[in-house]
Length: 135
Image (tube, rainbow, N blue to C red; front, side):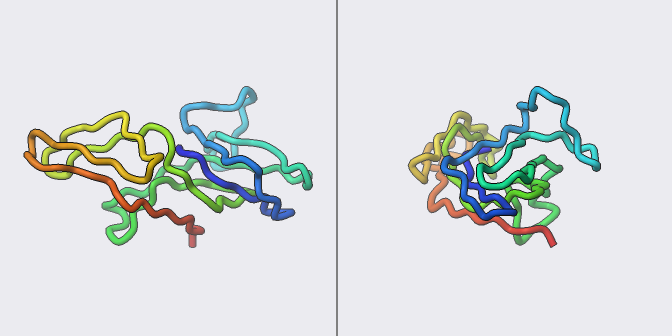
């Protein structure tokens, strides 16, 4: 997952650096939440002794939510995500052709290429993000 800005839910301290939550990397200790989700980030803010936890839960798909398709669903306890930066490597596939495009860098905020199968240009532009709380 790309870098994100986070804020402590107890003292409202904003972390000085963007943090990355990686679903493929686990902490050295086996932290498990009551719903058996595995923990991917654990820490403490410098101004509060409350533990901050982030765990991945299965994300919704576009079929589940036709009007809004989240990139990821997180179970956050004592931690609030406030910003997103699409740095890093991404992958996508052509909507019509299924052509896979790997190692896409979105740090500049856009990406363009050409889909040989579909015989048309493809792009990702005007990236916007927001964090919503589950209802």
